[in-house]
Length: 135
Length: 294
Image (cartoon, rainbow over all chains, first blue to last red; front, top):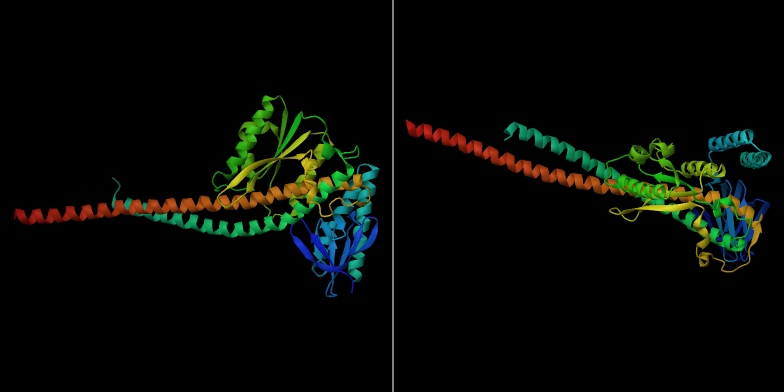
């Protein structure tokens, strides 16, 4: 059995998860990464995606996050999500609204840099939607 | 001297008022609990955010790639004040306390020859500040329609602030709100959010101690992403503290009102009873003296 470590998922509204887990899959800005105990210290931004948490009991929980940060140290991992919900509770209408917003942002962008940023965000959101619909 | 009927009416009306204030107190108590829970639930996020920020600023070491939101513009000519108050009154000195703090601050800044801009969050602060500083109010955020404060509300406000900053609209931004200490004490607070004062945050708050972090992407990039988010978090926290404070203030104000109404009813009832007794005595005397005269 893999070693356990402390994982915390926090959104501005509340603390969603705080428990001992075996591994966590994080949608990092530069690719997905699996965090296990004694991971080297890393700080990364995360993109909209699904966080998969494998608890000590072997149970798997999935959460949808919309951007944020992960602070990983050997002793634990803290995920500061801009907004996070359990996959089971995801509100399709809310997701659609976010995509709509992102589309508008991309259309409104003034310079190339902010446009490419908005488009990237939109692409991430649509990928996420696709993944969720398939699930 | 009011007649018996007047007194009776008066007592009835005070009793009705007392019922209303009592109901408002109970509603405030229920809302306070919820607001307090929300404020407490939001605390871990802002704490962790503080720790992460302290960590990353340390890593950058105040280098040249720190974003302007953090270092400021280097000037302090134009000040932006974000004054957060409640949307409703009937909560004692809650709103006026915040407004007074803001007003003192404005007066000081004006005396120093600085330019002041104001963003009002909440109707009451706007009403108070409008009297003296109407020309400085550039924006008014209305949260009356909002049933439950969410991060999105705070994010919208923070976005406005940041946009204004990037357009060069101001140099220093200060947030005014009321810190929730307890039901009976809320402390009006001024907090500077731009340039962010995180650089001095204690580094020992970080979990990893002096661990060498890997950053993905570069620290500077993370920071540019993190600072605006931190501003949203600060605004969110201010709004939540305010919500809890408002309810606390309202609760104690309504408690006082209920008690005052009770006192008033007691006093009025005594007058009423005395007068009734006096009238009975008077009628008795009239009857007796009438009988004696026969």
